[in-house]
Image 1: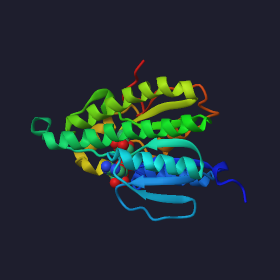
Image 2 (image 1 turned 30 degrees about the vertical axis):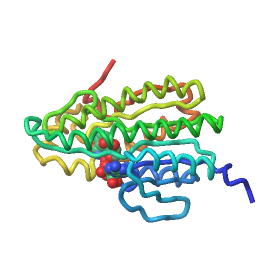
Image 3 (image 1 turned 90 degrees about the vertical axis):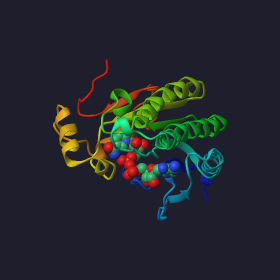
Length: 242
Ligand SMILES: NC(=O)c1ccc[n+]([C@@H]2O[C@H](COP(=O)([O-])OP(=O)(O)OC[C@H]3O[C@@H](n4cnc5c(N)ncnc54)[C@H](O)[C@@H]3O)[C@@H](O)[C@H]2O)c1
C-alpha cells in the first residue's frame, strides 16, 4: 500500500458553508484528501474527513494541522470559516464585535500559524489561502463594523504570513470577494442586495463558483507559483485597487 502521506491533503475551515463546501467538492474532485473543519456538523464522504471544531480554539486548530500533516502530504490550507452581522452601525454591539473578530480574524490567525508550523516542518512548501472581503477594503453600511475590520485584518495577516512563509516555500494569499449569491447574502434585505449588485460594473452579485476558481488558482503551486501576499479581488470591478 502506498504511503498515506503521498496523497495531497487540503484543510478547509468553514467547510459546512457555501464557499467551504464548494471548495471541498472541488479539491475532492482533484483527488485531494480533504479535512473539512467547521463548528457545524459535516457528513463524511469518500475522501472527506469532517472535523468539528471552533476556529477560535487554537489547540483544536493545531491538533487538526498535526493530524492532516501526519496523514497526508498537506499542500493546502484554506481559512474559510467566517461570520457576518448586519444592522445599523450606530447600534453595533460590542459583544458582536468580539465574536466577529474572534472567528474571522483570530480564527484565521490560528489557521495560518498552524498551517505554517506543520508545512515548514514537512519541508515541502504549501499554500495558505485566506478569505478576506471587499468589506475589508471599503467598509460598508448595514454591516457590523467588526466585519470589515476583521477582513482588513485578514488581508494584513495574509501579508505577514506571506513574508514569513516565503522563507519556507509556503505562500500565503487571500481572495477578497464582494457579496456572493448564497446564504450569507441572505443576511441582507433585498433592497440592500439590489444596491450592492448595482454598485458593481457587472451589475450582479458574484457566484460561489467564481470565488472557488480564484481560491483554486491561489492554491495552485504551479499556476500561482510566484504569487505571495496577494489580495485578489473577486468583485466584478466594484473596487479596483491599484
Ligand atoms: N458569501 C459572501 O457574500 C462572502 C463575501 C465575502 C467574503 N465571504 C467570506 O467567505 C467565507 C465563507 O463564507 P460563506 O459565504 O461560505 O458563508 P457560510 O455562512 O455559508 O459559511 C461559513 C461557515 O463558517 C462556519 N463557522 C462559523 N463560525 C465558525 C467557528 N467559530 N469555527 C468554525 N467554523 C465556523 C459556519 O458554520 C459556516 O459553515 C467567510 O469567511 C465569509 O466572511 C463571504
